Length: 128
Image 1 (cartoon, helix red, strand yellow):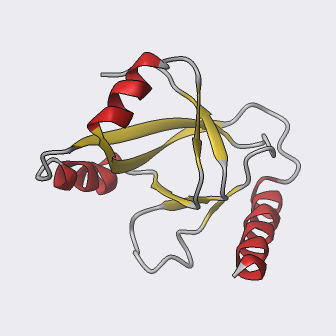
Image 2 (cartoon, rainbow, N blue to C red):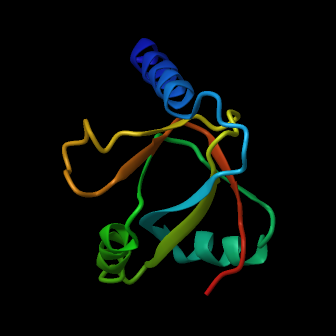
């Protein structure tokens, strides 16, 4: 299993290099991720605004907020979860967090999926 994870990480890093090679200007865009957090984790995240948040798994995101807003809404049905929609501003030429535009090869057509490697780190910004 470790070989597969390592290979997938390397593939994402290669795609990132191919897709954003030679980019020297600050080109940014926003992607979205919806999921459920335990209320305890959600309360902790509120207290850590402007600090760092790490996703310790591969991360599927979309250029369209509506795609993952539905995921966040579905978690509200569980009384012990809080539905969260993450809006993440991405600066494309930063290589420390490998990600790739996989919309051409994604099973879910039309989502404009951006896939992040494991242990991606983001700064927590303003919350609404």
